[in-house]
Image 1 (cartoon, rainbow, N blue to C red):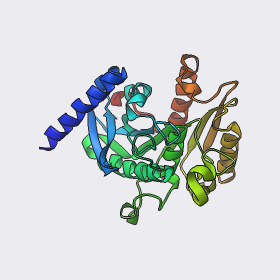
Image 2 (image 1 turned 120 degrees about the vertical axis):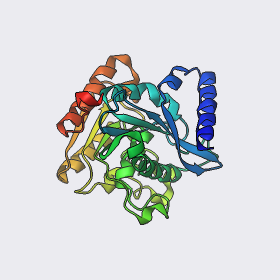
Image 3 (image 1 turned 180 degrees about the vertical axis):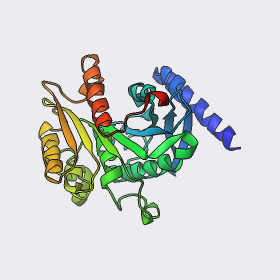
Image 4 (image 1 turned 90 degrees about the vertical axis):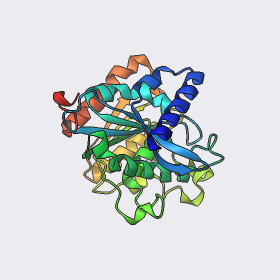
Length: 283
């Protein structure tokens, strides 16, 4: 019965992607894991697996952007192929967004993010993944959710938060929302009086994971100053961190072909320094 349901989900997703003009993404998806039911729908992890099956692989859990309003997990598949081909088990996360799930909030998305982390780690054996090498990444609002998997202790589903969340080995962030107060993105308009409680720069602590932030210094959506302040705070706390600046680039710069190679290389090199990069045999 379970295999039938998974097959149905795959065919349904394939049909949806076909109509959205992104059929190539279907070919890269190896498995669909439903990690949660919320807002009357299934929330899924779209899994990409390396070719090699001989040893455990590091994992990469990735959150798409869209201001917590829109966006789809399918649109991140092409971006993740680079990491899959390097030897990562990748998961693109479907989470609740305001426009597609009936007026949900960033707080709902945060709960989903923390659920997704737990589910990805729980399937480590099945996926051939080393749960001690679990990297989390995201862009824009997805960068915020990536942060919250590591920094948002207690902000997931109440029953789940009774046990510690899996450890995040590193954060890969592209033009991320790291300040949700009125100095950053979202502010009281989206978070009300909870803005600081959900703000990554305010949640950093000495045991936060290593983090790399890639950001355009001409970003008019998420202020570059936020990234500078986030990294400065991390350095003061002794967290291994790096800010990679893309001069003259605006929001979502990494999607441009002229920026892609450098963007990947910066992330790759950071993971290699942390000894999180897959071995040749794992590809």
